[in-house]
Length: 177
Image (cartoon, helix red, strand yellow):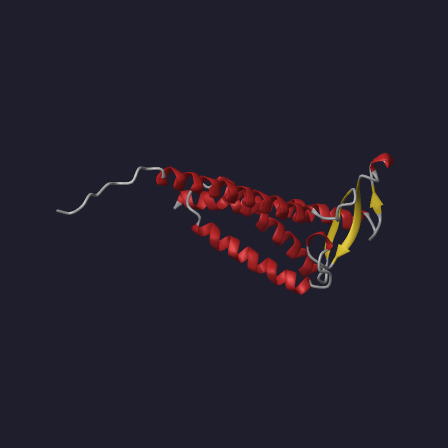
């Protein structure tokens, strides 16, 4: 029982850290910069990386604007699935727990914004010509990428296992007398 709680705790700890980092950075941006105002510590850096306060009604990276209610429902669904899956995940699987914790934290971080700010999410990280995003978006993206890598490794291991099992010579049963 204690091991199970410790195994689940990693997911919730990472989710909590992600939410805290996301909400504190968004709070700072909302209080220090007006909407569409930007800040960069060095003028030469501004074309490449800056903090730019925008309010996003769409999904991550500004996709599907005006679908905030749908994304709030998806966030609740994703959070529920992650919580249920975490309970069923066998002991260990630390990388999977890290991926799930990051995804859960990102989903909850953006959900908090949607609920508290009339369906909008504060985005502020602007790097080059890439879409403007926030800590929650980054957390989700890293979690999904990690999950994809884990699935790739698992698929390769299964293929190796099936190949090693299929290379056994056939068993000669002979003819029945």
